[in-house]
Length: 106
Image (cartoon, rainbow, N blue to C red; front, side, top):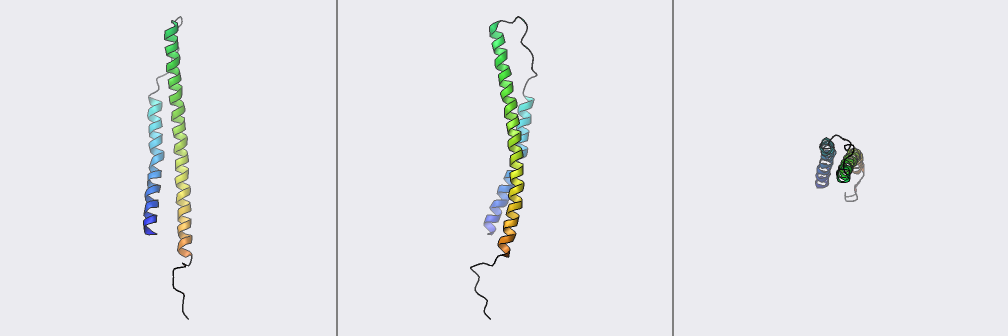
């Protein structure tokens, strides 16, 4: 049981680091998005198309950053639920009589 408990603690600690890491990554992605600017009026078709592609890339980055934040929220919630659940299971396990204990002789 002690080995399993240590593995669970390590897993919960790793899960706890995931949320902040994903939020940092999402922030870096968001900061890398340039401010949107309209294509110059009367620009040729190639420049307008290039501007459209740049805008699409920025939109994909925004969506990716939002998804990372959502995953971070789910990760934080999962860590909390697992910590609470594992604590309850451990308490219950310790309070249950074991089938491996010798019978009490009277």
